[in-house]
Length: 426
Image 1 (cartoon, helix red, strand yellow):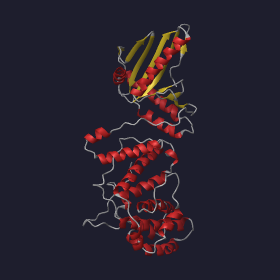
Image 2 (cartoon, one colour):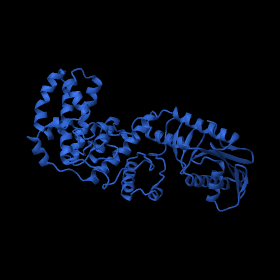
Image 3 (cartoon, one colour):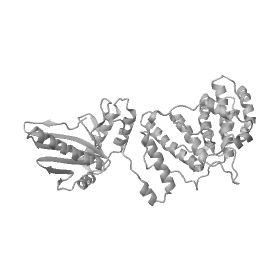
Image 4 (cartoon, one colour):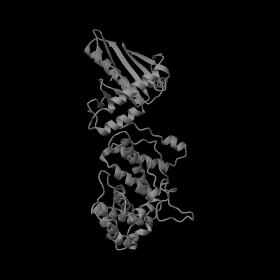
């Protein structure tokens, strides 16, 4: 990487680094730096120079939105730093993913250089410290990162976020948050939805997972059409059936007719045939279903787990780092002798609880999707497939607007209740 390096001549010391920031124009960066310091500075084009007690420190700013050579230079340097770290191999995958997210959003580069006449060791160290403090102030004020020592990126505290060998001096690294709540309030977005988003973002941040504030909010309790207890109980019965049926085909090597016979008692026991979605019904009747379909429907144990949580059969949803306890999910359903007994014994969680869980999983799914699109594993050691299934189940149970309510023309809910049409986009 073509970073500046420290040089100590016979009588003069020079050093410098690159800063990477979000500003798109050089003049924006210059204005921002001027706002940070209440002192005179010389301005020449895209360069700002301060003189402090015999030390000269200059900031040359270039943005991808600048015309001519300045814009070309900014784009070239930003592409270079991204390409460099894209090739780094490291065990600190979450740190690398978050660093690449920050670098990916950078549109500006500031070339900082400082120099002074050498005097004595104490005075020289004081000037170096003063320059580094000034650079750190710029980094904090512009939410920027900088090069360090030629092959590393550091933050405002000077600690290496990641170097070319994949090593890091920080326990974790998260992009800075840009809270959009005030602007969103002006747009009329309800405070309830904004607070729910804030809680999800901060809880994920506590777990060292970055999710931006600018993702959409979910609807409020007043606007959502949460499922009824009967619908959720019926969905649990349908999910149990298709998951067991798939297990018979994949794990036990049964033929479709044999597998249907195996789950027939469960269908009758829980009246599951009243609640199958069109896709589920087609799958159960298909004597030649593909293995991919069988694998897909075998994952419905994860959705069953969410329905059981929604009905109070589990106290909390586990962190999605492993699949659910299939045996426990099945055992809980088999405690009931009939659908009526099942429906009477359970209690559906409140809209608030369902929406809180749906909001959280939506943002976690975004983090998984973003990681995958950029070639990284899911953050926090979580299983992407588990998160995706929970996304589907929670959006459906909470009745989020992206989950089709399944209403017919006469306003009567059909048997599928929109299960096949849950929007999982992030």
